[in-house]
Amino acid sequence: MRLKNRLVMAPMETLQAESGLMSSKQMKYYLERARGGVGLVIVEAAGVSSNITMFEGAGLRLCDDSYIPALQRFTKQFHSEGDESKLAIQLAHVLLEPGFDMFAVNTRQGKRPCDLSLEEINHIIDDFANATIRARQAGFDAVEYHMAHYNTVADFLSKGFNTREDEYGQVTEGRARLACEIVKRAREKIGHNFPLICRISGDEYTVKGNTLRQTRIIAQMLEGAGSDAIHVSGGGRLEDGGVRSYSFFRQVPTYDFPDGLNMHLAEGIKKVVSIPVIAVGKIGDPATAEEVLVQGKADLVALGRALLADAAFARKAAEGRSKEIQRCMWCNDCVRLLARKQPVVCTRGALSIFAKKGKKSVRKRIPSQNS
Ligand SMILES: Cc1cc2nc3c(=O)[nH]c(=O)nc-3n(C[C@H](O)[C@H](O)[C@H](O)COP(=O)(O)O)c2cc1C
Ligand code: SF4
Image (cartoon, rainbow, N blue to C red; front, side, top):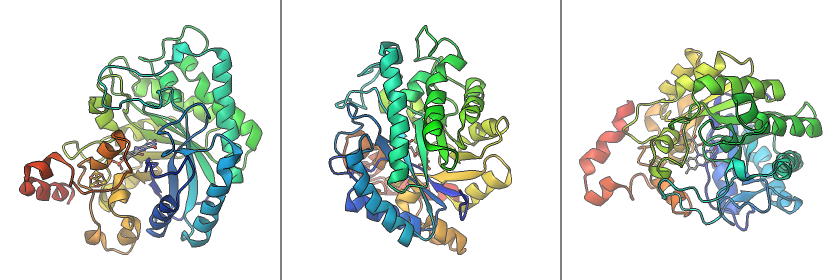
């Protein structure tokens, strides 16, 4: 797959699907980002299993064929009007209960890897492989497997969370077995001409969690299994404090974290694999993105909230109009909306603590951090 540039839109739940189907609002939102100039758009997580709903009807699904036609309409429009951007969809599975509370601290609602039978594991692998076929039928150019943060595959990869004592646990190679079997089974079914991207947390930022020491091995195993690229996120685990945990903040860092805080993870993985590596995490201006590429830390740079804040980020950067970019303030209001299971939009700090306290001077200072 050839991309027109090295900027990728990171997958972000919008919670604007209707009964699991892509809504016209979502179509417009993704099309705007494509016209805004990014080379690859990765559509938010879509659930691969019918008994698992990420965010009930508001989350996308690709767990059976009935979800294909709405996505087909979308991909057709995207490919004709999307300014030659390529289009992937993220495929995901969670063990969390549908009504899970993301604010819950030190609790885990739902199953753990050690609760699953071999038959259930086999079902998950099949579900990912079948959803991959559906994604291609729906007209996507690629898929990304969600193996990061608090997803089922990440739960299995996790050194601290996966306590299984069989071949799907115990050692890094065992914990990576599920991830590799998903890639292998999908590859067997779909052949070699369809890109499969794997998204992992390069470091879980939890006590006893994976660090680069384990994730380098996992990335190499995924490459061996047939993955075409590794997308390196960080943190996102919920067990140490829900969405208020340090791990979660490493996934969606606020203004008080340094820019590009997870780039060393992409760099660490890039050193041990030969497939393209995508870096992500608090990249809010074109100069920081360029630096990551020039320094050879990653092959592609993914932007999440920066594209929520300004759909035309890439176009403005390419046209030398960087100063016109509406910068993300890293206030995480969008994440708060997600945690409350409300439609995700960029509020630019309207819900945040600064707005409530009326500390406008602080809010004004935030965007200038990056300049
Ligand atoms: C509202 C919101 C929803 C997200 N949903 C997903 C998701 O569906 N899948 C995923 O892998 N990451 C998800 N993420 C994480 C982003 O893909 C990205 O890794 C993170 O926001 C850090 O990148 P940024 O600093 O450029 O925003 C989400 C982030 C936000 C803010
Ligand atoms: S709500 Fe805040 S963190 Fe989210 S995209 Fe907008 S400015 Fe960035």
